[in-house]
Image 1 (cartoon, rainbow, N blue to C red):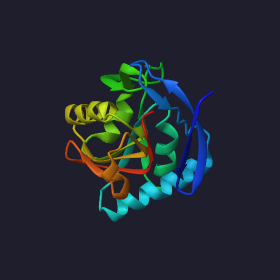
Image 2 (tube, one colour):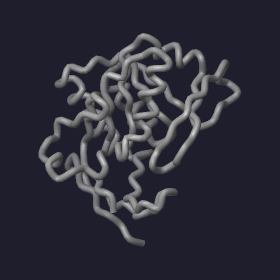
Image 3 (cartoon, rainbow, N blue to C red):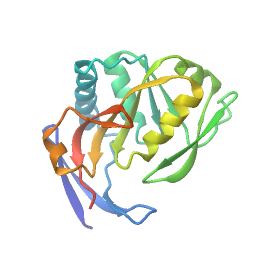
Image 4 (cartoon, rainbow, N blue to C red):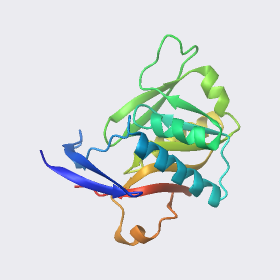
Amino acid sequence: MKEYTLKFLGIERKLPLAKTPSGVTIAGFNPVGDMEVLTLAADDLAKQIGENGKKCDIILTTELKGLPIAQELARVMRVDYVCLRKEAKCYMVNARQTEGESITSGKTNYFISELDENKLIGKNVVFADDVFSTGSTFKSIMKYAEKTGFEITCCVAILKEDMPEWEKTHKSGFKFDDVNVYYCGFLPLQ
């Protein structure tokens, strides 16, 4: 099995190389269950959010790999978080649906309960994900925010994928559709 060695935040992980549905080869980063990565990343991202003066009333993520970083970041920042699910569940009373897309899942639908959606309305929301790559997931979230009535104050991800050379020395993040994106490390496309 071919692999990529990821180094960031003073740690190292061996990642398997895998093909996405679109045929792009990526290093398979999966933070689920990796508490060392999650705690270090949440501390770093919370610091970046605070240092850049971004407001955060609540954190929003999509399932599955965004969930653990959203939960740990919410704990560090002492705010709640909500999740857009890929499937409506029976306990999601009056579930709302929105369209989404990601590099690993392709086109998808997301679902959220009316109760959780109401927690977002009129709030300053930080969107959290495991990897920021093409921006397709984030574009979906921005459309959802506009339709629903909340403001995305910034986006955070554990890793940034396919970053131009000059960004490697600019740890303070970058702008995507006029919104700041902060990250902890870099993961090149293979």
